[in-house]
Amino acid sequence: MEKFEALGLKGEILKGIADLGFETPSPIQEKVIPVILNGGEDIVALAQTGTGKTAAFGLPLLQRLNTDVNTTQVLILSPTRELCMQIGNDFKNYAKYLPKIRIACVYGGTDIRRQIRDIEHGVHVIVATPGRLCDLINRDAVDIQNVERIVLDEADEMLNMGFKEDLNYILDEIPTRQNIYLFSATMPKEVERIARHYLKNPLEISVGKKNQGADTVSHQYYQVRAKDCYETLRRVIDCAPDMYAIIFTRTKIDAREIAHKLQKDGIDCDALHGDLSQNQRDDVMARFRSKRLKVLVATDVAARGLDVDNLTHVINYNLPEDVESYTHRSGRTGRAGKEGISVAIIHSKETGKLRRIENTLKKKFEYKSVPGGEEICRAQLIYYADKIIDSEGHETLTPYEDELFEKFNNLTKEQLIQKIVSYEFGRLLKKYANVPDLNLSEDERKDNGGKKSGRGERGGRQERQEDYTFTVFSVNVGKDDGLTPRELIDIINQNSPKRSLEIGSIRILDNKTKFEVDVTGIDNFPKYFRNADYDGLPFFLTEVGRGEVSNSGSGNRSRGKNNFGGGRSGSGNNGRKFRKGDDSFGGSKKRDRGGSKGRSEKRKRK
Image (cartoon, rainbow, N blue to C red; front, side, top):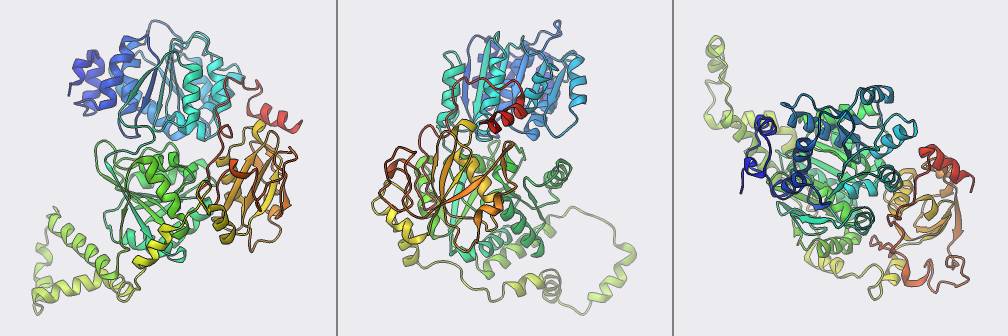
């Protein structure tokens, strides 16, 4: 492998990255840096998080800046505030010995007036979240007409978060751009579409395969009864005393509940979800990054764009709805060449979803037995013993030695160890003294694994009807409003009084959406959505019923109970397959000049 010197970087930049400890470029850096330095080609780069993407585009872009011109020449778009701040800090570190370069970060959740003042002083590089940059454009507070090079970092995440209209608007505002560099961990069809529309004959660079996880991550799963999922989670954590992990849940209600339970069980953790203020979020992340928290419990939305080094585990308490989300979750561990573990805790009805993820990633998940009490206690005691042996503290005990030795004089070495262990671990040993075996029998696992579910598999729809009682609902937002299946699922989960609802088929029409959900045990389900909204548009939910439903207003009736349009819509039983076009990028549709407020007002007039 080459050294950075061989890639064509100049001395000031080499000196800056040497101070950061950079010695040898990563594969993505080795491939991307020379291309950007030479100029002329757009790039689509596929690489997992933690592979050094920021330096791959940052170092050559800094070198190509013309500091004699006081204009914004480089624009970097990222999905979240945290990632935006990280990229900005990295750029400033890279440019340590290039004092004339000015960099500004603009993102939501902070004073826009201060960001405007920073830009007014003149900047060469803007690192921005799409929403905040659109607000600045609409205020005429930023001039990006002369931007020459654009980076779309974590492109799949930006589209997943609903920034497609913002991206269209921003890219259409920069007619003179020379190059676009698109970086993504996965390549769903939406990302491929934006690449086709905006990039010119891009060079494709990959350090992995499409939609495939990193080779440094091993994938494991525990299969238990649904009622045993939390107890399994607690045992997995207790059996790994050196764990430093993110636990992913489907909803913010789950995140709060699980974090609260873990705290009661004595585990240092906290939750990260959408109800936290920015100050609360910053506090949680500061404690997690400093490792005062052992685990962080988070939703996918809350954890997007987080950059935390040295995670040992990612734990999927709920499997995500799509493979791309699982790839992003698992990619948060096993970074920078280090080994990591991605754990899935599943119940019987999630077996089919796990197999689909395996097939897409081309990776086999290793089945693990739920740890028993003896295994957990042994792991904790050995870890404690190793910490004592490896301790480097040499504080003097001279003033206290006589009294201490006299206290322990009548104890043998074995007795002393037993008393220390009993004092430190008495509660743990009692807790796990006679715990039940949570593992399913081999026959139960085979039966569960052999079930067929989801559309396209013989008998899948019949099984889904037998397992769940679906009710059909309609809502007043649809494809014209930019609604995607993932966003609909997030709204349902966030407002429902019952966590982890089973959602069946989804049909997104132009100005409304119909979907199935099992609301057994919930009275008047629509009342929980009275204060819900989608991007400023009131979210009016109405019950259609449990009988046959008309198909897209075409007059055709669906043949099966609770089935929208036969086999074209999504599958049920946690194995949803969305139709092509429901969540597409949408071409070059120009954003309303009124920003997000303008979009909401436009929708209300429909």
